[in-house]
Amino acid sequence: MNAFFEFQFYLFSLLAIVSALLFVTRKHPVPAALWLVNTMFALSGLYVMLDAPFVGVIQVLVYAGAIMVVFVFVVMLLNLGRSEITDMRSLGARVGAGVIGLSLAANLLVVLRAPLPRPPLAEQQDNVVTPVAASLFSDYLVAFELTSIVLLVAIIGAVLLAKKRVRA
Amino acid sequence: MIAEALIVSAILFSIGVVGVLTRRNAIILFMCAELMLNAVNLSFVAFAKMHGVTGHVFVIMVMTIAAAEAAVGLAVIIAVFRHFGTVDLASLRSLRG
Image 1: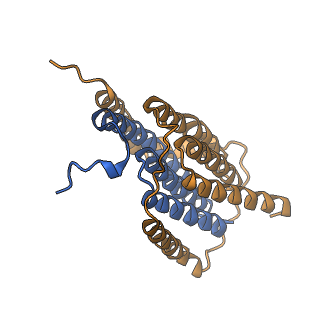
Image 2: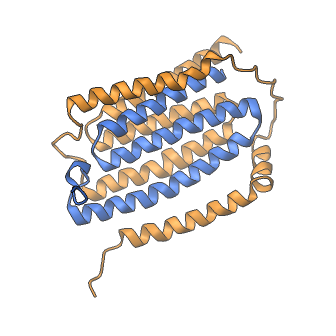
Image 3: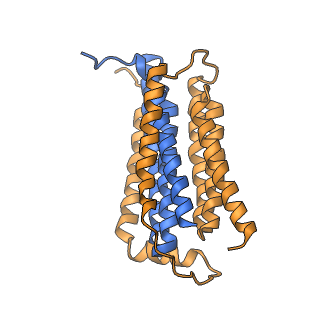
């Protein structure tokens, strides 16, 4: 692992964490959404560093490209972009949430007390999609098909929920 | 490399939890949930470096379900906004006894 690679890994990690912190502290929904998009781009970079370039591309396309656009679109639709009052809870609740968050992070970091086994040296593959696709369409075929049903139900549900009620 | 990715994942997940606990805007709460899903995805990818390509498959599944969840959730938020005229969760008190 050369120094340049390591530097980039830490750079993307720092970008992700700082963007996430800025995301939860923004008052207005639109800047918050844009910082979250920034977090997702940094995570996509991390995925590429972790030998998952396909997942990185999907991250940018689906998360940053599709899901966050829907969020910003709803903010625009509901005209929430210029709300004057803050939606933060009271100071006590914020301090409590910070304590809970820190203790949760400490809990999650307990995993590092045991040394992780060294990963086997991954063989360099030119084709990064083939292994994922082979696993997705053979071992996890049932889950994949069920996912398509979930998407169909979500489409129907979203249309039903969001359409204007016509009074009979 | 894997340990560092897991640290970043834990920190991002905690930031998402803190966001859920401190905000009252329903849309921002949803975005915090997306941040938590992303943190879990990062640990999936990190473990996939150790255990093979299954982690990537699950990341793709999580993204699909997240897209479906975002579509339905935002439709619910639009319906709530139509009914109550706000998405501030503190002002939705119909179920409060």
